Image 1 (tube, rainbow, N blue to C red):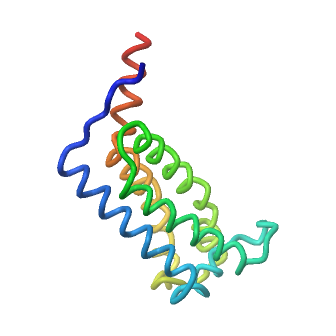
Image 2 (image 1 turned 60 degrees about the vertical axis):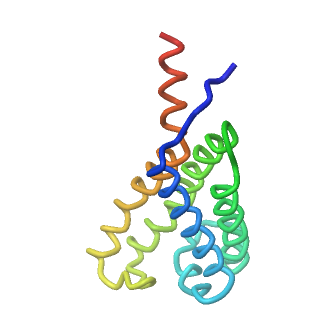
Length: 144
């Protein structure tokens, strides 16, 4: 039986902020930042860039709502899923950097390169704020 993971007030606030960020970003995919998000879609993605942006926007809104609503083990799973999502969209950030694409105020290679280092921060934020890191550590300790 899995251990119950409890999150602190700071983790709950951080998760709420991340969930809100995801909802706003997802809304941006569908409306005000649609063209900028299209610029980040790598050429190897087999779908139309607009379709990719719209679909990922819906997914981001869903992930944000789930971050705000889920409890217990479902919240831990959400953290793992969100971290995986951030890993899956990382090629878009690399594409923006390697193709020198200006979007979201990232108008120099230095800014675009700096953005690449923020993706692991988002992954860590998702894992920590949902208690997924704690759950993974507990699972590892149970094995030893």
